Image (cartoon, rainbow, N blue to C red; front, side):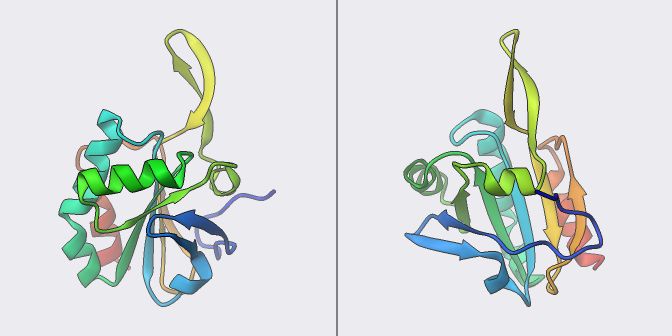
Length: 155
């Protein structure tokens, strides 16, 4: 399967999400979409990243942007994480890694001296026409939400 490329339209996909719904990229045309991939619900870095997007959500909304978090966790896990953190955006469950592979975020990682394949913290900005405008890979959480917002303002 091909992966996404900056400057090209993102292929449509759909995934189960919080709120007993299925989110489909094509249904979000006309809005900027921030897709942030994170390794695991309820872990320190992932929680902080979600909180940063949560706290800045009103500013993203003013820029006609939808924020969506994606990990390999189940919808049930996402529901608990979203509720505990009061996230105003949906979390998508990619248990089969279909969208993770489309965005090429599955990478070898070192976990306690053992190599495992996991989600590399990454964010993608898709414009209102469905074109990938920017990508951030190997994201450091601090200041990241500000960077993404600045990129949307620059569109």
